[in-house]
Image 1 (cartoon, helix red, strand yellow):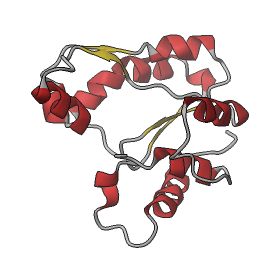
Image 2 (cartoon, helix red, strand yellow; image 1 turned 45 degrees about the horizontal axis):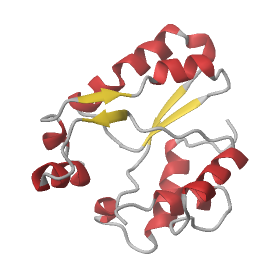
Image 3 (spheres, helix red, strand yellow; image 1 turned 45 degrees about the vertical axis):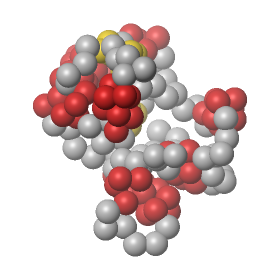
Image 4 (tube, helix red, strand yellow; image 1 turned 30 degrees about the vertical axis):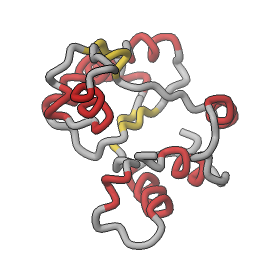
Length: 155
């Protein structure tokens, strides 16, 4: 309910919104279009019964995330296993020092494997909080932004 990701991505690929889809429909879409999706976090050490923890995690504020212990997904390992990956899209237009730290190992892997020619593409957030200043249909606007920012359908 807080972001339009499953409307934007299918729209770019000429399909209807999958906002009301489920895990199986999202997996089928990704398989059909050779898309892999992972979160940068494998886990965050938060108590789901603690309302302050839930609020911090659900709001996904950088200033609050730093207060938790977390484990990052090993994206370089994913890249090693899947030589076909040609682009990594990060749904954050800018990366502050916290996010740069989270992606450091990924950036280092790409720098050490220039022959792979993996592109890092920072994309405008699909979160509804990113609607500020957007006139018209948000999903269409963000889809156009992603394409302008370098998202490639078949890299």
